[in-house]
Length: 96
Image (cartoon, rainbow, N blue to C red; front, side):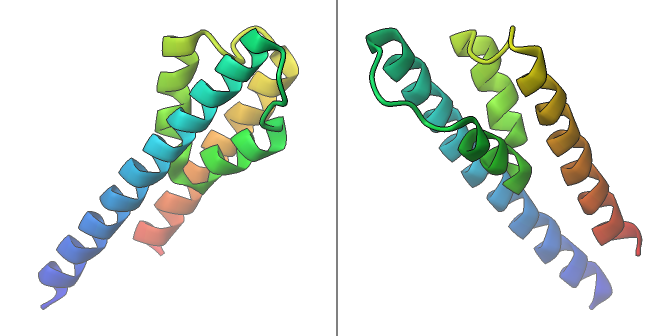
């Protein structure tokens, strides 16, 4: 029974990470397009919160694909903290 519970937890976590990564990647793409057109942008706070909410793999992919938010060091520092916090929370979930 414990093994089935763990398997279900892993599946749910994987689905959440994939879904949030797709949402976050899309948000980065939309923000990059808005930046090019000099239109209204998605706030950095929103991008960071989506990354923190399990979307950081999508954010990392988006930063590479769109070359977006890669130079701004203040954003990168906060982004690194959100990734670390998310990984720490995941570890605590599984090991406590």
